[in-house]
Image (cartoon, rainbow, N blue to C red; front, side):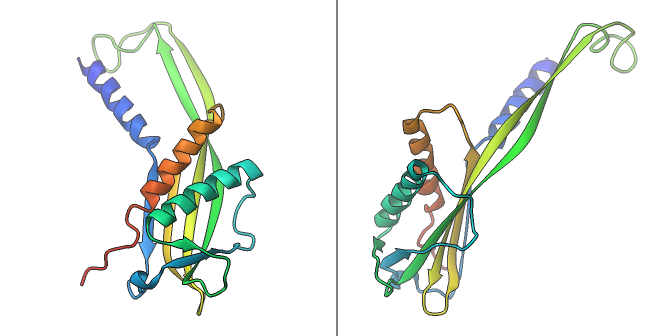
Length: 183
């Protein structure tokens, strides 16, 4: 019974580790109601370079969800806000150990009696992608809103699945845009 509870708890925690994570922050003094247009700008030295297909997927998702929030893309320098995004990928090692036979769950003191057993440990590289979207006031070039989304990357996923995952991440990241300022 205890083993079953431990297994269920481990699976629940494991599921949380791989859940999509989003955050946002904003300038409480900014007039978000006045932002109607945005212009893409580059962040110098700011992120890993995306291949053309990935770049189009990310920008398409961002543009679609910014439009849903009432922002219109423009190429004019007179845009209400400048928008910039950055991407990053981190690699983490995950180790899994499986024990079979021998000492372990036995009777008596501690973990059990004497015996022989086998342990096998495997390592797996987990890639985590992060997308950060910044909105700047063009006049004084100050950051007024920042959102980020991160999730594991399935390198074997089909393009449609990757695009859907990116779209969902952007939607979740922009959920609280424009922010509600409490008085």
